[in-house]
Structure formats: C-alpha cells, structure tokens
Image (cartoon, rainbow, N blue to C red; front, side, top):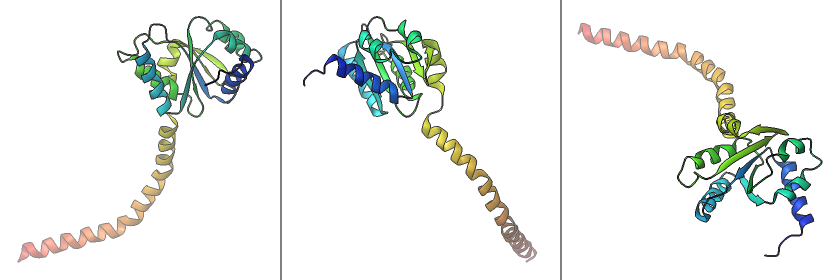
Amino acid sequence: MERLSKDDQISAIGERFGRMTSAVLLEYKGMTVDSDTRLRAELRKVGVEYKVVKNTLVKHAIKDAAYAAQLKKFLVGMLGIAWSYEDPSCAAKVIKAFRKTAAGEKLQIKAALVDGAVISAESVEGQLACLPGKDELRANLLSTLQAPLQQFVALLQAPAQNFVYLLAAKERQELSRD
C-alpha cells in the first residue's frame, strides 16, 4: 500500500476530528503487537476507528480548532487516537475494559476530546466510560414511552379480569357446597 503524503495525512486526521463525537488519546508504549491487534479488533467491533499518528501531523491538523492549545500538551510521546463517530462513550468503555486485561496493562489514557472539550484521563475512565451508550439510552426512552400505555391497557383489562375472578370464586363456592 502506498503511503499518503503528509498533506493527505493531515487532512485525513483533520477530517476525523471534524466528524468525531469523541476522541481518546492513548499512549501505547510497551504494548506487544498481539495486544495492539486485540485492542484494534475490540474497537473495530463497536465502530471506533483507531490510528497510531505522529504528534506533529495532529498538531497541524487541529491548529485552527478551539481546543488545539489545550490538546497540545498531550501530543508528546507515542500517540494512538481512538475516534468514535456515533456514541461518545463507546471508545472509552472499550479502552477501560481492555486496560483491565493483562494485554492492556501498558496502555495509558492521556486525555479525551468530547464536543470540543478536553477531559483528563481520570475523567475518561471515571465518567465518560460510565455514561450510558446509545442503545441503552434508546431502551430507556422506549420503556419510558411504553409505561403509560402498559398501565392504560392494564386498566382496560381490569374489569374483565375481575369479572373472571368473580366467576371463578362463585364456581369454587358452588363446588364446596356440594
């Protein structure tokens, strides 16, 4: 595969930052190739894009962004970025779970970027990774919308159900007299 020119790489990185909902910056120093491959596979399963990038290319890609100055201090050392495009907490959840395994011991979270705000590594694991996911939120909304309808149906069925209970009690009473 032919390598992209630096300008193409910078525009590709800038495009990823432009359409992401969150990005988690990672330091992968000391990780084995096998561990890195497993991390990439786990991230790919949930639709997160992970790339190892050069710090200078990222600096050029985000130089016009409002968060560039805040993010600049994290652009040192070995840098991998996990971009999530739909669910902001998705990448953080996978990374948090991966770090608990033996393969992920060396993986370090530097910071994250969510909606233009830079958050610390502690907040990534403590707060961002604990947020409910998109599917979880949909399920909660659906159950909230269904609850009144379920109660309404139960109220409509109650008189008929009570009448059936009355008939059953009357039948038992007749059988006990015999």
